[in-house]
Length: 160
Image 1: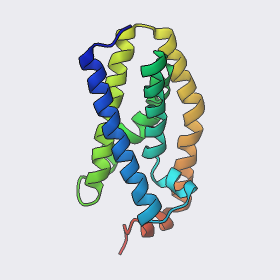
Image 2: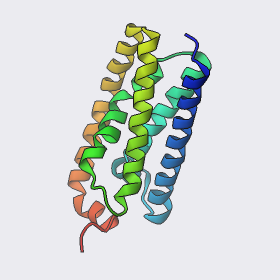
Image 3: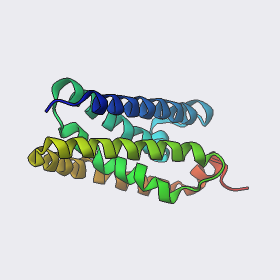
C-alpha cells in the first residue's frame, strides 16, 4: 500500500509531536526530578510506550512492515488514551494530558492506516505480540507504583 501525501504528512507530524513531548517529559523526569531508569519507566510509562510506537512508525515508513504499528497498540492505549481519564485536567497534569492526546491521535492514525492496509493477519500478529510483551510491562508499572506510592507522591509533590 502506498500512503497518500496527506496520510504520510499527518503521520509524520503526529510522530514528531509525540517525539518532542516524549523527550520533554523524559527530560523532566531525568533532569528535574532526577529519577533513575526504573523510576522513569514506572512513573512515566507513557515515554517508553511512545518510543515503542515511534520505532514501529519508522520501521513502517521505511520497510512498509505494519506489525510495529500494531505492536504499540496496547501500551499506547493503556497509558495514553486511558491516561486521559485517570489524570486531572489542571496544573502540571495539563502537560501530561497533551502527551496523552498526542498518543491517542497517533494511535488513531495507525489504526486508520492498518485498516486501509486490510492485512488483518499482520494486525492480529502485532496485537498478539503487544499482549505478550506489554501485559507484563503494565503489571510491573502498576506493581511498582503501588509499592512506591509514597515515593512517587513526594517526587511529584502530590501531598503537602
